[in-house]
Image (tube, rainbow, N blue to C red):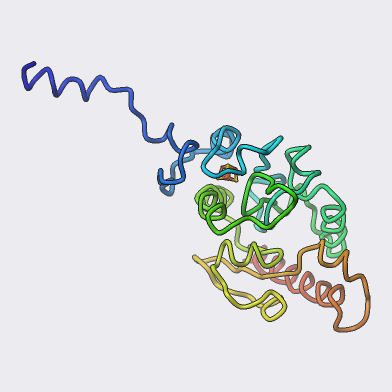
Length: 225
Ligand code: SF4
């Protein structure tokens, strides 16, 4: 075959790197890959970049306003989320709704909610480091698309998954951490509050009340500017 013909094989090639993204965690997802959340969700629905894709019922991408100023990031879907395809819909989700409502934040208008991993780890175990790594580029694309000013990281896995933060959640909850031009605050996971329901001053629920008020104040400040 002539050199010219050989080169034309490349031109006719239908090989498309983007189509391979859901097949292998080694395929990079560069910033700007997805023009919309719809396209990103389509890839997630077919994704097997990690083993969690083999056992999920439904992929759980996110819910809420994709143009919200606040993004809430949890760890991974549980049973209710796996069944419905929506994040934070079980008892912990109901408590999250109450926490937001206590400072008049609307979960459909003011926030977008997503998870570090989009598929349920069997038996509700924590996602592994490899599974977090495989899914993280989707999360980074979600953050780019939503473009939130404030990110709330609920629990240790969210904290580790996004910021690679080694300090524990109890040490740094309620603190603002600047990341990529955004303000992040680690907060307790609502399921932790369900297990520790004391309302004592200094207890987990009391601390969450302080944190969510600080979030509301920052949200108001941002809205004004
Ligand atoms: S958890 Fe993320 S990386 Fe793993 S299969 Fe699901 S969507 Fe893909």
